[in-house]
Image (tube, rainbow, N blue to C red):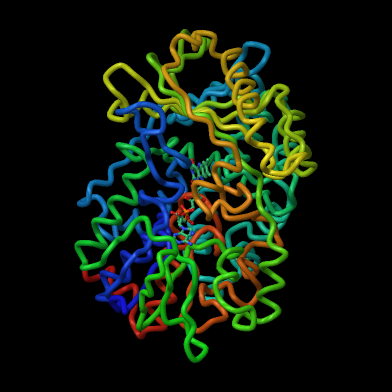
Length: 526
Ligand SMILES: Cc1cc2nc3c(=O)[nH]c(=O)nc-3n(C[C@H](O)[C@H](O)[C@H](O)COP(=O)(O)OP(=O)(O)OC[C@H]3O[C@@H](n4cnc5c(N)ncnc54)[C@H](O)[C@@H]3O)c2cc1C
């Protein structure tokens, strides 16, 4: 018989760690069980190429979490536990096939000047867009950081905001519809499309309209924010908070089963056969597709099983990490530029074609749109002196002709095509500057972290069928699962994927309330 805890936390992504930190500070005895040998899930930082080169295995940008009450009020004391953010300038650099480029600077007027080189009207529209969204951002933020059912719905939130009727329409539109209606010039439109795509939601999908505002606004406000030392600085700081509050973290512990006794979830069984008991609750970031396999089907009910059965993955990501002997450098209008973040949309048409290809299961390496990150230009602590890390990200389906297993054959070729595309824009990145590389297809991303189900990097699609009160399933969006005592957090719950910490904080709020505790008391006790 194993040890008994108040709460067993399944998985150590940043959301479950954040929830565990609130729970532990509320005095609950928590244990976190993580399948991998490292903490953080998609916020892990690992030596993927050579010793001393610290690569963000998945996420690099910590933009969304900047708006969280957790960071804004430093509710968990993460700064005292070593979490520090860097706000690089320029924010992002986007080169185009005709040799021109757009740079987003921290200074709005400097960004205005970049856009005005292409269209003064569009530069004016950019300024208006930022101003309009500034009025909505706090209200929309409250919606994201409130558990479903604990506040107004998204429609009510938008309609209640200043200019609410406009926002209700914009939110229901697609990001591309908003961009096409707001901007007229091709380069500006392509830049805006690339930005709006940065949470990997299809630009033409109805319901993505706010992405045309929120992503560019967030980056204009905070830059392409990265934690000093790597993405893992966040989970590692959270782990310190948990341990300081008496909680326990165990890696290399994959959970295989839920324990259900008298209709209640009372613990988990690990793959090694250990039974870990939870007297109050089990809180999971196990992907919902796997979770339902961990207890008998009659424990879930038909409705829930239908919703999880019909769950759709999102667009997959394809990542190559490089160790470099020199920084990434592009020829800019005023001389060489070495941005932390850059991207190659190609054109609006190419960005829109990407989503069609993914839906059809096509891997197109022709002029691939990329997201490129060179964190060491702003944070040299991530590599040996003078050396750099580079992450080149493409966007592809998980299901390819021949099945996902075909990725093992395709990966080299796709990685090579992405590199050649980048070298076209950054010719100084010659092959001799590449010291080592590590390739991760959508299949590899799933194999590394089971929560990246079918290569979906945000838990699953975030379209209308899997958002708000429907995430992960109608009737079960308040983090309470159909089995009493079992709670769910992470990217498969409201408001979805990305490094936001919102699912974690929202789940902690609900779980604490169910145990007769208040998150406000935890925050005030700080
Ligand atoms: C390549 C890539 C790049 C990305 N870039 C960004 C970015 O720059 N900015 C951004 O905001 N977002 C980015 N994202 C998305 C973002 O990283 C994720 O949506 C987010 O980190 C998910 O956090 P989470 O806490 O919900 O779960 P995860 O981080 O996925 O953690 C879940 C954890 O649960 C563990 N687990 C799963 N099953 C079990 C089990 N049975 N037993 C025990 N443990 C288990 C996993 O090992 C994992 O550690 C990226 C994602 C990918 C894949």
